[in-house]
Amino acid sequence: MSGSILHPEHLSAAIAGFIGTGLVAGGMGVLADVPAFAATLQRTGEARERAHGAARGEILTMRLDEDRRFRYLAYIPESATAGARMLVTVHGISRNAREHLRMMAPLAERFGVVMLAPCYGRQRFPSYQRLLPDDKGMRPDVLLRAAARELAQLSGASDRLLYLFGYSGGAQFVHRFAMHWPARVARYALGAAGWYTFPDAGQRYPYGLARSQRHDLGEIDLEAFLKLPGLVLVGERDVHKDSALRDSRRLERQQGGSRMERAGNWVAAVNSAAHLRSMPAPVRFDTLARSPHSFSRSMRRGDMGEKVFRHFFGAAPR
Image (cartoon, rainbow, N blue to C red; front, side, top):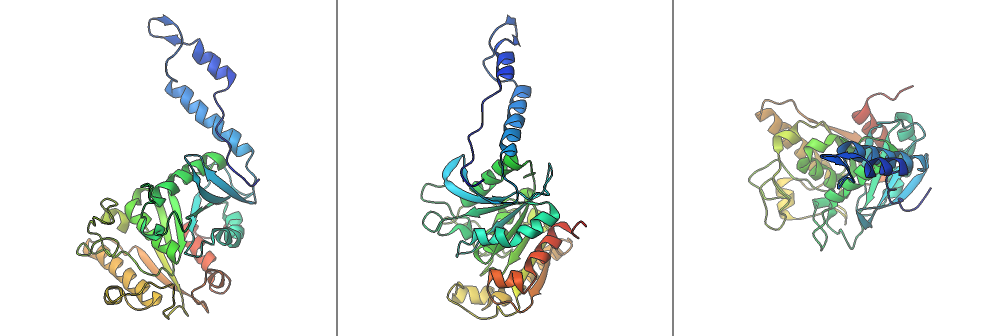
């Protein structure tokens, strides 16, 4: 099935009839509000109806009910069961969300994992990597949370804790999402981010943790973020500057001159921040064999998908 999500159906006639003739305080009458138990039944029934019609084993194109301008892709594997875990994969500036799902689908089938890939359009979200809102104040991270809730209803998966992966600009988005929403994240993995938000209270966001008037996204709970297991991956050939790499003297002084340098320095800074708080090192760093700055080559040559799924879910079930 490819297309928009259907709007939720109303209560069944049986429930509606029960509510209409139910008891209220002081005698018989029509209930003004839906009782809590009936609302639960309504949500459960809607989720079942929507899940029943959702195609499995296909990449689905969805429009968010809460914001019809926002599009996301979903993959519900044949192997998914009720309460399946949800993996979010975030594209870079090439906006290759479909390629992410296509190349990761075999892994999702092996692990029984439902996948979601948000689509952040260039015009509406030119700075989604920094979680910056559109011209009407809507933030890309808030839309992602709404899409995860919607997909959970559709698929029967759980969106309580998300497994977050992003490549290049998507990796920028993912680590900043994890910093702002640590209670909603199970684990995260970053593939070759161009630059990072460092655990440095002396630098303003998005370079560090201090509040910025221009980027006022709220406080970051560093200790909560430091509890999240992270994995940082960079291709062993991703050591040169290119036109897509953000470049400035400030960034070079703080983070280094290449994606490889910046990743190593960020991992060291995060693990050092954890050590200062007597916490175990939360982030591992690994390289991808024979891989330049390319999502597809990192998947094919560098075993990136396998590394990400093992970090998230352990060994694949047989």
